[in-house]
Length: 241
Image (cartoon, rainbow, N blue to C red):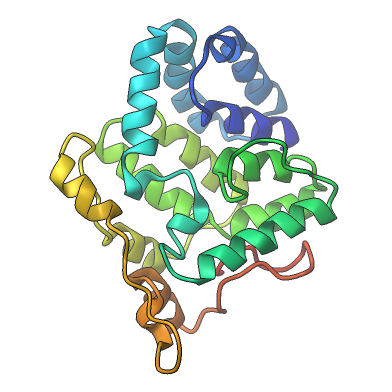
């Protein structure tokens, strides 16, 4: 699974000329390891072909529209769990500490919850630990895959592959809750402004769950553990499904 995780991480990074040159190698790594089921490997092929042969500026524009300008497609895991709540900052600190505890020092400007970085980290772990941690955000990957399917985007296949590698079916209730969140079109600037508008945070006594986003409320209402990374690599990085 290690090579597949690294390859999928590469597919989710901003397209560059170097990536175009490496696209065929990325595809071979996934095919050789055979951790991703054949039917999903077949669905990855069109994306890899596009990244290898497409116009680099078109590829970059598409990537920005999808993942940078569309909040519901954000490649930052905690965006889909914590939103703008206070929990997000602590979750970042805890995830970074988990990386460092396992010998991974972040040398890029990316936040710890950036999905390609998270996958790179998992690729350094023993298979059992990687599976356990990958399983926890599988519901997020499933929701992202569904949103990309609606857009007829070949990037859908990457998230289908991640769900398959996680090895267990995401909880339908949590995936449904995620899919009920606003999903603005990247070309609808007014909707995008509304989606990215900062949510007010209430501090002090009585703040309660008012500072939590809708998803957190739904997850806790379902009696799932509170979010956050704990000290051990064997403990949750985010809410279990």
